[in-house]
Length: 226
Image (cartoon, rainbow, N blue to C red; front, side):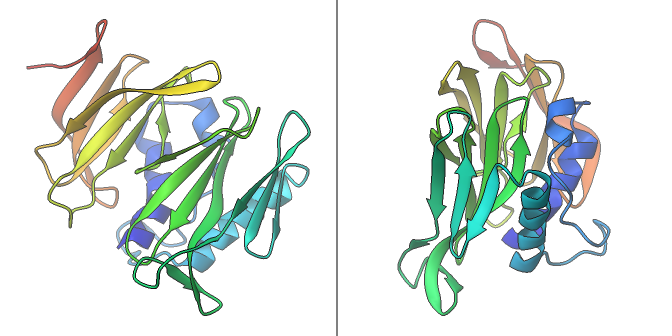
């Protein structure tokens, strides 16, 4: 289920989110089938996405075995290594349990790489700054606001009883978590409306709807509208 969501999210957000040039230019789809008929997206599909990105940005992204090499704007190389972890948590690569990292997106205008982190059960995403290599791990794929100054990371696993989302603000070289909230609905999709408001839509990444569950706006602080 996690692999399917990871692959299908990128297709959905490019279509459901408001038009955002920076969020659609660098993330090729890994959903080879339609959202309705696709039941699994394998690590091989994520590897294909990474390969396409490496070809497109050959001067920026390379892979050597279990290590991703990212060339930053300052000329240095940031290395993201498949980290050995316990057998209970790890995704097995070549017979060894690791946290498996794959480059899933690059946003040149925003200055971020996004890597997918696969575990045996569950996953996460790693943001890496193109400027200095600063990194931040978040639960869900980052959905950037149209101006690129904020992003939402949503955790909406239908098998988890505590869905939630976080809103982050990008302030220069720092990323600050502005707001967090638990969600009353087990399945939801987040979309931006402008740069200071988000809506939670009913449904999942494979079956979204146009029904708005709730809306949050930023007025000195993030507030849920009644």
